[in-house]
Image (cartoon, helix red, strand yellow):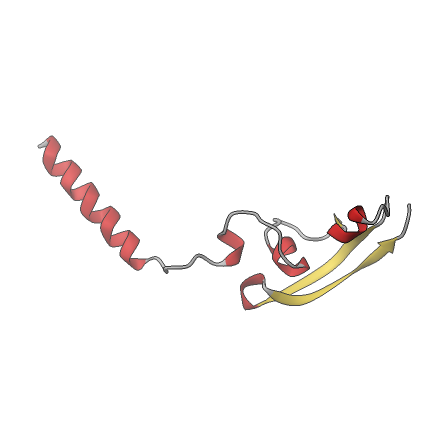
Length: 90
């Protein structure tokens, strides 16, 4: 009886895997560097989120960031629109 249960579990798991897409949506992919929309779409609530450009840190521009006030996403979070307030050097 125990082996029957394992066999059924394996069949269910195989069936579920066949139903899943080959490539996961960007919101479910592991975190990595990306454009603004990809970064924001991975957060549960993109409002009041602070972001800064990587090149600002590399250029020595400290305490500069955008505070996102609203965001809308298209194409599974790869594109969209974002609104916010720029805080430049503090």
